[in-house]
Structures are given as C-alpha cells and as structure tokens.
Amino acid sequence: MTYAPIILFTYNRPVHTRQTIDALLKNTLASESDIIIFSDFPKTEKHVEGVEQTRKYLKTVAGFRSIKIIERDKNFGLANSVIDGVTSIVNKYDKVIVLEDDLITSPYFLQYMNDALTLYENDANVVCIHGYIYPVKEKLPDTFFLRGADCWGWATWKRGWDVFNPNAELLLEQIKKHRLSRKFNFNNTYPYVKMLRQQIEGKIDSWAIRWYASAFIQDKLTLYPYQSLVVNIGLDGTGTHCPKKHEFSTVAALSNKKVELQKVETKENEQAYKAFAHFFMRDRYKKIKEKFKQIIIF
View 1 (tube, rainbow, N blue to C red):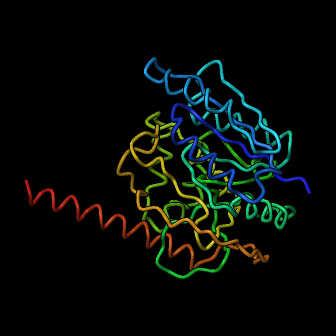
View 2: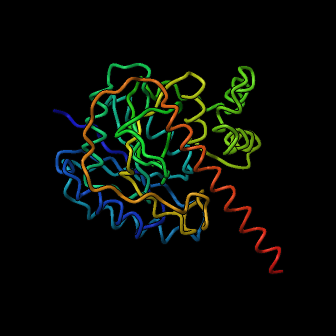
View 3: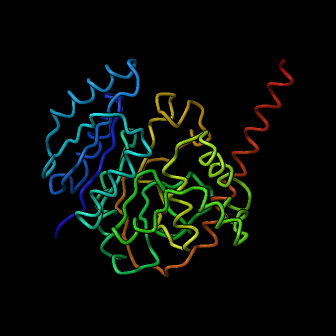
C-alpha cells in the first residue's frame, strides 16, 4: 500500500518544529511515509535566526521513508505557502496529509488519516479528513461529518482540493446569495463571515477560512474523530496567526487510541454541529465574563 505523503510547513520556530517531527516519528506509519517539508524565507531581519536554526535542524531529520526539504528563496507567507505547497504536491501524488510546525500528533494520527483517505476515496461528497476536534462536552460518534473543511492536521485528495477557491470576495458573495451566513457561523456562535470580510479587506491572510468556505458552499464534508488526534502547541504567542490567549487555547486532550474506522453515512451530523456551536457559545460567554471582571476590577 502507498501511504499519503506528509506535507509540513515550517518557518522560524525550531523548538516547535522539533516537537512536531518528534511526535510524527512516533506514529506507527512514520517509517513507511514520505515527508515533504516547506521552509519559508524570513519576512524580516528578526526572523532570520529562527529560520536558519529551523533549516539547520531539518537537515538532521531521519526516520521517514524519504525526506524532501524545499527551502523558499523568498517569503511566501503562510497562506501562499500552504496554497502553493498543497496544490503542487497533491497534483503529483493525488492525496496528501498536511501539518504545520506547531501541531503535535497522536501515534495513530497517520494511520487514521490513511485509513480514512482510503475508505472515502471514491466518495465525492467528502473532501477533507481532520485530526483535531474541539473539547466538546457532548458524547459523539467515533467518526462523523460536518459541512465544510478544516485546518489543524488534515488530509485531502486532488479532487477535494480542486474545490478550493482563493477568491474570498466570490466566496462571501455566494454565502450571502444563498443566505448561508447563520449556518456558516455555526448558528451565529463564531464569526466566520467576519473572517471572510477581513480577508477581503486585507486585515488577515488566511488560507483556512477560504478552504472552509470553499467546501461549505459546495456542500462538501469533513470527517472528524470523536477524540482529538492533534494538539496545537502554537497558541503561546509565537505563531503568526494565533496570538497568545487565542480563543482555542483550551485544547482537546490528545488521544492515544487507534480510531476504529467504519464507513458512516456521508451527511452532516446534526448532533456534532450543535456540539460545536455549544462550544463556541461557551467560549463567548467565558470571554464576556472575563471582560466584565476586568471592568469591575478597574
């Protein structure tokens, strides 16, 4: 069996990158998997040392079936790097597993990704396999689908990535035209439409919001596990797009159990949709409560 190649996007965080790769190497399929690592060029002088240290470390990595390092000679930025990198590799290999340099994976992450890619390979309704799930309180099925696509440890096929539309203005236009804003925002519990507007206005540069919107508009689905196979360690203020005290700083516990995959009906799981909305709502209330406390104190 040929396993999906892993794409890893790195920048100027050698400590995070080492932890990401160390966790990957503990995966059951690591030695049978090819890894392609993109190292972006420093945007500013203050990032040079971090990029150089990261590249020095990457040259010492071993333990995968093959390792290819692509050192950018100009700064792409995360969004352009991901879009360009995923497009070039998935067009060559037809399927990919995608990680960034601040994601710690379960030892069964690669097994789950490859098994799911095989299981749903010929189902055109499914465009993404995801490894992270929010720490929801509700008990959910072993695997389930939600509409759209996701970005913290994921996999796709060429046919899946082909739905990606980088034009945020057109994506927002379609959401408004079909009156999908409330649904897109998880029953108005999270401001995804606002993020699309910010992308259009140049206030953020996110490939992820455009990936989610692209799949959502075309009524495509992402598969999730009931317990997270990914933890994000980049919510410490070191990331470009995830500042300290990010709203998802409460990460899910990392599962060390193998996901027993059985094919489930390819439609959105209403229970899971509500569970995600409840999580976003609880987070919103928590932030309002914290702001109120600050007002009282001061």
